[in-house]
Image 1 (cartoon, rainbow, N blue to C red):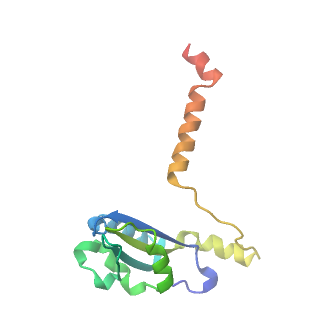
Image 2 (tube, rainbow, N blue to C red):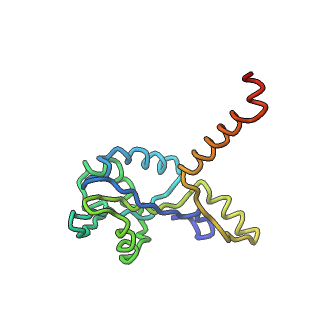
Image 3 (cartoon, rainbow, N blue to C red):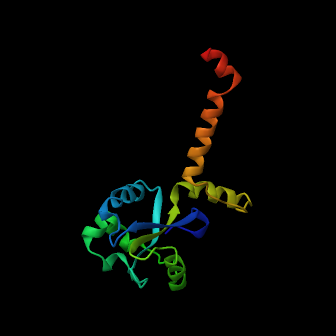
Length: 159
């Protein structure tokens, strides 16, 4: 964990759902491991969920799963802080379709910790935060390109 709470970076979470009972067949683990090894993120909690076709929930920690399901994700096991409560897990499980599996990941954004510490030391505090979905950013870039291509200047150049 950060040397002091004042040096803690922003903490995010996500739920990644996969069709069927497998957790991405170990294909994602190398990318997560790379982020950890480069000190960009610190994994704080990780829970794996499976929903049977009839909606029954099965939960697992890293140590409960076979290495073939996780790949290199096991590297994070010793450092987990177990941030999620049982109720958090149950609430997040509601987002998963029957017959699917999911990984719940909570991480500290270590890359942002120095900036956050500087803000706090200067007396500032975070008052709003958000995330723009990737699909929305792609759509905005595409709309800008389309508008530029259809602008009067572009039309003159094309003539």
